[in-house]
Length: 365
Ligand code: M6R
Image (spheres, rainbow, N blue to C red):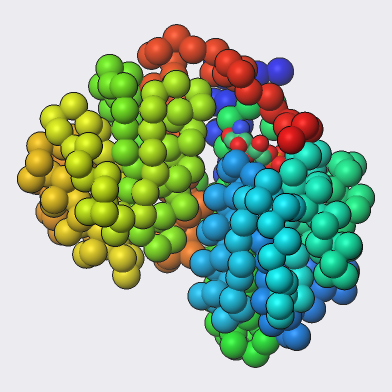
């Protein structure tokens, strides 16, 4: 049932404030503010030397944010592979002590095969999954639930942000286990995570602004998405979302890679969506964006109040979110990217919930 919404995708975008708070509740005890592993499972990060992360599609981009989280908040180095590579690569696992998989459906063939491969190598396995009765949930040593509820739209939205929430909370937990996060810092970080639903609502309120930008996007045949640091995976996710439902060719790049090739594509017809909260990467991202502006590229800057006030890029179209701590930016910035893809697809008249050639759950390799 789509309720008042035109598509499941829109409904699922709107559900995010609520399901983010459910998911957070699985990983944080709300009365004490302490992180926990759901259902009392005995997952302890104190002796984990390295984590191998693997997933497909949007789950892979969540895992990419997860790597930044684990490295930043817990000091645990991570390997990362798309599951279709991990399962065949036979890479030496070295000091990997945990394989962590991310999957909405829990049935994705390559992710399941990667899980089985990791087990065959004697690794402990954990899975962040949305469907609790799935094969991946059944076969993992540790099940880390996202509580996004059923996701019907083929383009993943709420499952993605809930995966990010789970990963953020887990990374904090890991930092506590390893003694790199003090109890006070833990409380501060979990309090920050409780702000996510409110900020997600603020992002949703920008829908009209984004809809106007989407009218223009729908006239294009290509788009570039850029981001740095925590926002790099978001650029990849924004490009995936756009191509999958609007069929506009879109590519995501780390902003620093621009001058290593993609800048050759920039002219007046190329829209460039830049994900740039005013964080430690901001200045660097903006200097890349100025190179785009100098070549006539059309810029859509997704930033926050501080970023907008810096007046960094003249003539850019802006989507302005409130300022927020950096751990939240991947979660909240996903929403304008989803809305941009959604409204562009509506303009194009595509089948938003069932885009051509795609299946919700990819159970063959
Ligand atoms: O169910 P999973 O999370 O394992 O699915 C992985 C991908 O097939 C999925 O994320 C796909 O990329 C989505 N259509 C993206 O919106």
